Image (tube, rainbow, N blue to C red; front, side, top):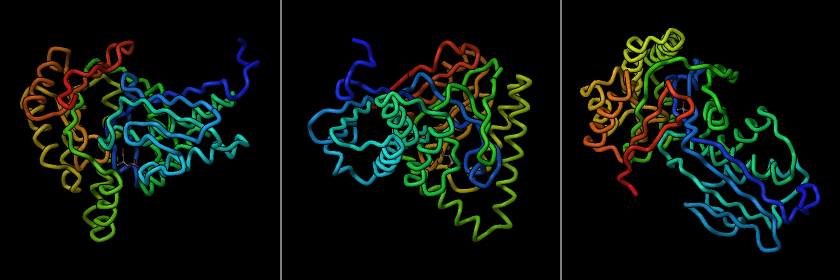
Length: 330
Ligand code: MEV
């Protein structure tokens, strides 16, 4: 049957987004400094939407029940959904939303933005209505504001992008990463809580501005340095820059004992540099490695040091998305 001939109730809308890691610039990006992040295209978030005659329903790992009783952690998704439906002159009647996620929640991998993006895309697909990158961003930001307070927009852009992103003061540009190395990403298994760490940095900023503002500006300088290293395929300098960014984020109070353990293990086993990624306070870290052999060695060391999951991302082979090396949670 031709798609146009189907009634809305027979249609299925699909939306796919992905996880992300921030290479550098987390937290300082909230204060208008630049940041660089990459989508993890091998770690996907899928939403499937149909419209039937039963009650509106939401089905995901964290909640499976009527849309009318969505729990508080999903209130941002609900707001993005409502805003999308309003633009589409539609409503939730009979909607069934099914989320299938590989993105770990609350680990600094952008899961909240990725769910919102997948739902917004699926709803538009169900209504056969195209979505510009800007309106997708705006709709995801509605959800992110509820989830995180005052998000920079970096997660909303990167989880819905196919390319690495350079983000600065609300403007985003795709960047081509011409690096020859690998990054190893490890999950501490501890929930991160971006809202809390962003609020904690804000408090420090307001109470000790003379100390905190230079740290934020320094992170901005490190991001500019990292961009130069990426453009020149200078892995050695990039590794040192990652280390300096991690030390600065630690001084800002957003590291954790588990993150420190993993960062140190990666450095001791040959990583060129290592840092936390995302909001911190738990969640994930990343390590820069020269080649596949080094990435394997570092991933083993991270696992030994207590990582719950480890992924390897190759900058060299863009056709090969990151793969999960170890998962002690499943
Ligand atoms: C969270 O993934 C990144 C932060 O910089 C917050 C933000 O950009 O909104 C910590």
